[in-house]
Length: 177
Image (tube, rainbow, N blue to C red):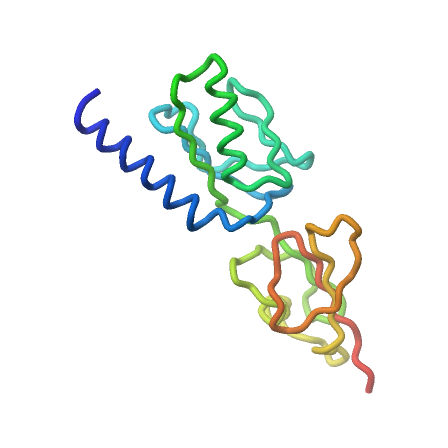
């Protein structure tokens, strides 16, 4: 191995440690997320964009399907390393990151209901703005959200400063006049 390759390997390992510590905040992947996967030193196994399909799986060369739905990027990376070590690569270095989050949805009394791209740090007030604001009947205090990670799909009361997560469905109800 040349000095240049050793330096790159060290930088890659360090960046992976920093990346895991700063970006893997517990976000659970789901259908519609688009991931970037980098297998160090293996150009044929590096992808700028690879989607998580409707079944919550990503299909990857040599190792087949990898379950992503409900897992963090670090867990997906660990699973890929485990599978790549099983007869394919000696010491695979894999980094996984989210390129595009799955959309959230806003319905009800907003001027432009529909699905919108998620942006980290987005709050309900920002989601309403993306929907071009409230209609004349829309209430800024009668808002519910169905969280994507809630298996019961139970609407929860929400406030304008509540965080939005990818896959959430927000419903703005009519106000009483």
